[in-house]
Amino acid sequence: MSKDIYSGLDQLGGSNAIPASPEEANLERVQNPHADTLYLARFTAPEFTSLCPVTGQPDFAHLVIDYAPGPWLVESKSLKLYLTAFRNHGAFHEDCTVAIGKRLAGLLDPKWLRISGYWYPRGGIPIDVFWQTGAIPDGLYVPDTGVASYRGRG
Image (cartoon, rainbow, N blue to C red; front, side, top):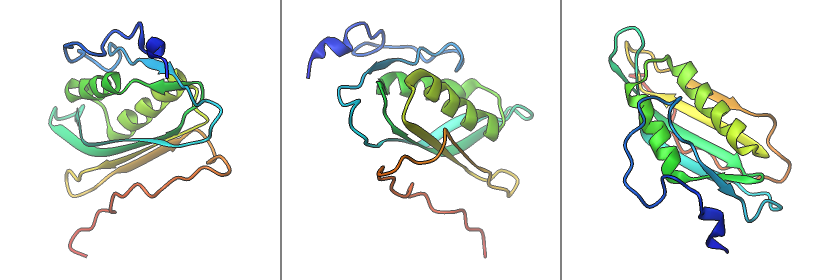
């Protein structure tokens, strides 16, 4: 594999500040050397944080991002910085989850992408948000996300 596909990446291998907002984050991609192969890549962010737009209090989620790469792969450090930018961003659970999925889908042009947002309860109500680009491609192995459903006292 050629290292040429990594040239031009702004954030790889250096020290980077946390972006001021998700909109300002520099989400980067690299060419997929296996674009002709159907496979699944998974990113898990078990400590995702954003702010409640009403109270300003932190909201926490366990995100699972599954995608079948097309021509592009997301550069993982830029993804980490992008997700971290939500720590100072006020938005509802649904907005955060769907916005992340749409931004990745627009950047990567994947064969398929799904984001699962398992939000920790606030006020006693967990909110889980799921978004995907379409039907799972035939022949693509998609394992369970591994995140247990919320169980209260029941």
